[in-house]
Image 1 (tube, rainbow over the protein chains, first blue to last red):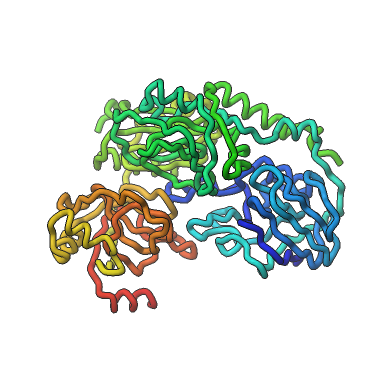
Image 2: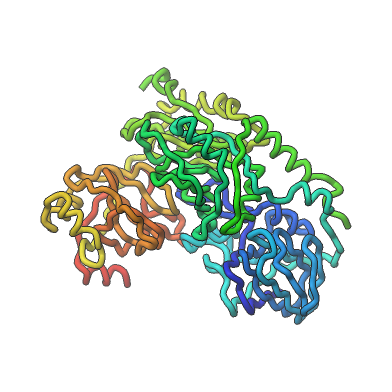
Length: 313
Length: 232
């Protein structure tokens, strides 16, 4: 089996696929790629199914030696990748020869970069998914972020190298946004009109202590009316909960499945990948949309992803 | 319970791909049973396009495929399920014992719980051990069971500042609930003891030690017994 030797792990690099849906009754949240659009496209560039397991790097990429070579693609944010010191582009398939080293550095924009390999990263599935859930130490590679010296196996396939690129004019329409569109949350009415205006009218900064569980936001505190007594309930991906202190938190892919804070809004599905590209100190705003708009934006996004022109051979 | 009463279940959109079904606006055994029955029925007769369920005390979050359904279409498909909850027979509740080493380094907040409620250490332990708890649901993180039935005399507010890391196996209390932290996670509950039992074992078929509806008792053990069980 081909292998990837981790010479430097980067800041926080984990194995991810599109996550494990359906295990909420066990308290297990889906996990999966923080920017699923980039993972799906990266996999398609190397001829994989969209859901194949890849490496998700965060803010600072790693250094990887391919002892037997591989066909790879980088997607998501630009981490200044080089292959044996020669710069390589994102969004295209590359043939790595045996003994070559792929090195990624600090991000130039965005939070996450994906390294997809033809065949996918081979790990033991946990609840039908390769995704790492770091908080519980489950899934992925030993349930944790990669360390120096780790050796990952690449599932074997026998496809010849085929040069594929992603069409820039479509990619630009899928690129991450800093204005996140939201629908109402289940406790929106707990927040009186001035609180709503403050929330939708202010700029928020992503706090340092943000991770795959949730993004903490700094900015104007949102007053909650004391109108209800909250009983813990199921929480959705992208829910924007407001604890007593008034600083909003966006629940993300490794979210808890239930929670006891009121939710003022919920990021729409079409903008989940944008959340995955937010870095600490990034400034964001929220824009309210209707259910219909939320659905049609997701449909448009899926149509772009399904378009024949997107992946070019 | 009649079909009409179930008809009062309230649907509310939570996000563009999920909705909440509320059976009640307070914690009650009746609402809990309806949550458990709906989970059971959807497990036996799944609805295509419903991709996940997050149960809680008196509600279920239903996650669906937005490209297939609108909220009202999901409600239309689920209403007949609610009308049939009476037919659902829940398994007899299992009885589960959880050995706990109380106080000291195992339960760093036990002394404060005693101070708050004017109890001796032994009285607090006896109270926690005397109750029969019900697993209302599993949530938060894998294997975390929300246990209802904490004696009133132990009620203590949550920590003002949650701990960043709680040792796995920690037994906590918060409001009228008790629970066992399966992993080293952040946590704001008061820690009164620790169990050597694993609450979540991915290598077992039944990964969770506790299931929805289980009846739970805590048994006090000594630090020596804790070490022996931990190494068993």
